[in-house]
Every structure is written in C-alpha cells, then in structure tokens.
Amino acid sequence: MQDSRVALRHQWLGTIADRYGLAIDSEQTASADASFRSYYRLNGADKSFIVMDAPPSHEDVRPFMKVAGLMQEAGCRVPTIHEADVENGFLLLSDLGTQTYLDVLNEDNARDMMDAATDALVQWQSISREGVLPAYDRALLTREVDLFSEWYVGRHRQKVLDDRQSAILKITLDRILSHNVAQSNVFVHRDFMPRNLMVSSDGIPGILDFQDAVYGPISYDIASLLRDAFISWGEAFVIDTTIRYWEKARRAGLPVPADFGVFWKDVEWMGLQRHLKVLGIFARINYRDGKPKYLADTPRFLAYVRETANRYDELKGLLYLVDQIEGTVPQYGYTF
Image 1 (cartoon, one colour):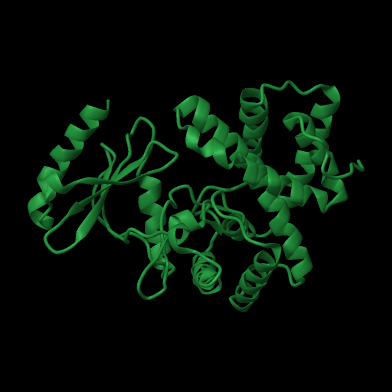
Image 2 (image 1 turned 120 degrees about the horizontal axis):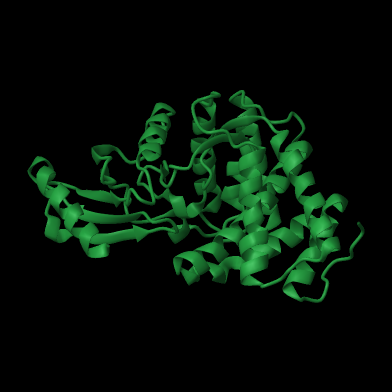
C-alpha cells in the first residue's frame, strides 16, 4: 500500500513538476498526524511546497479545500492550494514553514503569541453562518464522547462499568452535553491548538489541520487552544487569555455571554467534553491504528478532567468514576 501510494504520488507530481520547478527527488517527510494523511516537503523553482497525501479509502480532501476557502475569506493565513487531484487524494500546497507554536512557546512569548492566535480565531468565527459546515450537534458530540467509554474505559483500561457506575456516567454526560449544545454556534476549527498553528515572521499564525471544521459551540476552539494535549498552562494564564479572547469576541459582535463568569463555565464544560473524547481517541489510535505515542499524554487529560469536575458539584460523580477506572486513591471528595 505504502509503495503504491509513493508511486502514484510521484506520478502525479511528475505531471505538474515543470509548472512549479518541482524537484521530486528532494521530497522529505514534513509531518504525519493521527489520521491517515501524511505530508511531504519538496523544493520548487524558488520556494518549497507541501504535498498532502490523503488515501481516498480513508480520507477526503474536499473538506480541506472547502474550509481553506472559508478561512481565506475570513482573512486567516492558511496554505494556498496550487494543485489538486481529488480522485487520488493529493494536494500541492504552499509551505507555511517548519516551526509550530508548540515548538517555540514559552513563558516569555506566550502572551503575544496567544493574542495573535485569538485574533485569528475571532476572524474565523466572525464569518460564521449556518448551513455551510456540518452541525456540531448533540448527536455528533455524543458519538465523540462515547469514544471514552468504548476505547479508553473498555479497551485501554479493560473495565466493565457496573450498573451504578454506568448510571453515574450517563447522568454526568447528559449534563455536560445539555450544557454545551445550549451555547451559541459559530464556525469551529475543532483542533485549534499550538501544534496546528505555524510561526511566521510577521506574527500572524498560519493555521493547519482544519478539514474537520464544523458549526458548533463558540467556546470549543478557545478551550482547545488553552487545554492542549502537549502543553499545559497555569490557571492564571488560562483565565487571562480567555478573558482577552472574550473581550475581542464581544467587540466583534460574536455571540459570547455578556457575563464572563457564564462564558468561563461554558469553556470549562466544553473542554471537559473534549478531554473525554480525546482520551478515547488516543486509545483508539493506539489499538486500532498502531500509533502508541499519544497514550503518553493521557495523564494530562485525566488531570484536566479531575480539575474541572472538582469545581462543579454536578460533575463530582465523574471524579468518582475516574478514580474507579484508574484504580487511584481519591484526590477529591465526592458529593453526588
């Protein structure tokens, strides 16, 4: 399969090589993500390019192309699509560089870089309109969070919940989902995190990995940005950055609550749904796709879950379940 994809990719590149001065033998792996997509960098006449290889049996490049157009409409910096072979799953893209936010973020530059990221996020959300992207509705959110039970609890921890545990989980997830779907909707990148933001000389971030964008809860992307799989921030910084985003969003006329306290709860509960989903996804990637490295980051997400659930009495049952699933000594009291 791999050899045939390489041959097919190089055959396609050969048909467009003269147009861009492509040196096919300069091809190097640029990155590979948790999906079946892979990316390659190769030299052109006067600049480098990125080739996306998305096997059609697993991936579809059309959503990427659609969302790229929307993001360009919003004034965001995304890869330019120079050439496309939709049938075979190849795109020739402009190269946004080699450094991600994750590569360079530190305590000294974090405020400025996160400000630039939230500027771009507000731009993206400001062109939102219903009916353009798939709805991030309760059904889709439920399918995502169910990955926690199936893959993390069942497959990774090999636990079968008893009737009481199952009831607690059902009640808790219902509370989380009901709260989240009550939020106002905007365009959602769905993986707006430092690993998918590229550093540039003018400070405007390049945005990648947006093909799964949807129309859903406004708190989702800011929660993704600040509660990341690969880097954690102190609560003071998270709250300050969230406030700064909220103020920008209000000025832009986005449908955030007028009371920041209400919005903060929205962000926390939305983040909690994402944390549970990601725990399931990381387990699935390991057992189904043979990519074990993501499991190393599950402790970070378990910490996010515990911290958030402990702040709300309605979510204390989740603390009990996590301790039962992990076999750990309780860190917090249970009142549910």
